[in-house]
Length: 182
Ligand SMILES: [Mg+2]
Image (cartoon, rainbow, N blue to C red; front, side):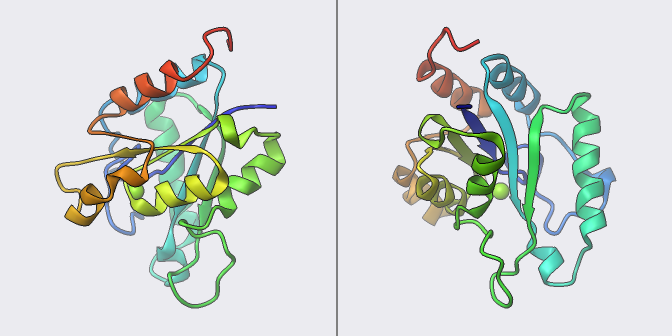
């Protein structure tokens, strides 16, 4: 079985621009590239699991989301990801059941990539990311920013680990990972 690290996209790998539709606004967060490099080097399959409710709301198109994701890969200069999963559900309205905090995207990846979720991790900046990871049976890490909402800071203990940089989160994951895993 494979082990995975699931990344939220907005404010975890790239700066959060609400309902981002313009690839020119893609900006990698500090440490993102190094995090992906380090974790892939240790044998983790990497995934993006991203809520994009702007599509469900009719404000942006799937093609725009795909263009932003393509720009993210272009900036990285390498496709580190086994898959990029996106959920278009709006918070209300027709639901396909994938919107975090539901764990649907993680279970979808598990089915297609033979993942051992108990040895996998979910990294994100919102409690919905942490909850999705918990419901999937993953260990979870919360990335805190200077603009993180107080209620999220207060609830950071919902995550197994919390830090203000991806570097610290990667170090934590690698500490928990067998060193012989490739
Ligand atoms: Mg986010």
